Amino acid sequence: METQELIEKIGLCVARGKVNIASPFPKDMLGQEGTDELTRRALEIECPPDKILLACNDGMQVIGSKFGRGEAFVPELLMSAKAMNAVMAHLKPFFKAGTVKTKGKFLLGTVMGDLHDIGKNLVSMVVEGNGWEVIDLGVDCKTQKFIDKIKENPGCIVGLSALLTTTMANMAKTVEEIKAQFPETKVIVGGAPLSIGAAIKMGADGYSPNPQGAVEYLNNCLIAS
Amino acid sequence: MKSLLEELKKGKVLVSDGAWGTFLFQRGLQQGECPELWNITHREDVFAIAKSYIDAGANMILTNSFGGSPVRLKHFELSGRAVELNEEAAKISREAAGDNHFVLGSIGSSGALLMMGEITEEELFEGFYIQAQALKQGGVDAICIETMTDIQEAAIAIRAAKEATKLEVVCTFTFNKISSGEFRTIMGISPEEMVSAMKDEGADIIGTNCGNGFENMIGIVKEIRQVDKTTPILVHANAGLPIFHEGKVEYPETPETMASRVNDLIDCGANIIGGCCGTTPFHIRAIADIISKRK
Image (cartoon, rainbow over all chains, first blue to last red; front, side, top):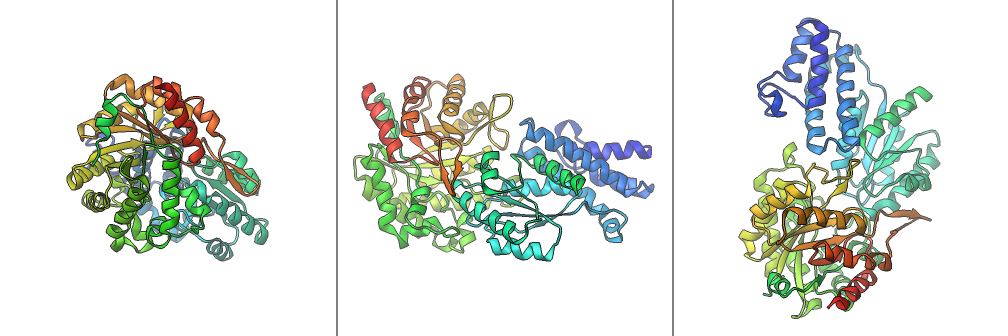
């Protein structure tokens, strides 16, 4: 396989969630090589790792957009994230060596009182798949936890997630506190009970109903800065 | 033990309860606190919520045990008290309901994804089994498995509940309307797929809860009835998507707006109607009034 063809194939496998040859998903790619084998081969013939990464970002973009439009669901998105992780495992040495770089840091957590992490984890995977370093603070995060981590990671962008309607008020308080201490720090919110209206009233900088929207927001921040 | 199915065979439409969580918070539950622990520490408060729905005219109430599986209690380091917390949840609702109303033991989804290996099938089964058994011990008439999105997890929950209790089992899924106008769970399951899978597992009553307002519930019930004319349907509708207003969370659908669509929901085939997030005893009273006028 030509270098370019190989790279495109990796991107396609990310979009379709094809992890490796043994994986039964997706059915129509049964028995074909996945991101694991293809990335290993690509690096053997000295494909530039940053090109591989770009193709993967495009692949994640495809599945993320489909998810946003309601044409793909959690299982498909998770399989793509798995395929992406398989690529990242091979690319790790290049990140360490500085050959490839992340776009920036995204600090992410579910707000206090809320134990739900499916939505947050999906955002984390898609954002990471798009080339960002994600610092995942987990669930039930008190405001102070965000504040401390923002101090440790200057320049990061912050994402807050909530599923419970009862924790929306906590989210608003956390946004307020972050903005009071770090007026320059961008805060994006999301989760099932949220809406653009609620986000504005909370004083958040951004809102997204799905992971891809978060990626677009983050990438726009890069252009703006 | 009373049979929901027998009651429904009489051709009645039954009224279920509304939201619990909102009222726990109103009564002082703190963010980050375990709601099920209140069955022990704030028994009177939980009882008052249960009773408020009976007083509002509900034929059945659920139990304060949505997050009571040992899997979810783990976060609060309370897994070891799962039996106690669920049994007490059932006892409280039983006391409030008396013998003339039904009590449905609430079992919520685990919050863990099987397909990502966050939990094994065995762990899930064991958790639901322990919870269902304890709810029966506390005196529930049936088990209500709620807010499911994944066929596999719902199937495990039904199997566990059936095996542990031999009681009637209700199973409801949460659907969103996607851009094409169709309904799907976050896992991509359609109402039609839900129906066939849940019937295969032996669910006695199927249905839908949460979601986004009454109007969508009518659409979902219609879809279920297209593929299944006979299995009773339970609907726990929320009061629409919350609005954040002056630091407070408010819901757009009033008791009156909900009540105005109850007849439509029944006409498309719903058999039990109650509320989810954002609904109150006032909503339940309004729904019950409409239903009583039908007879």
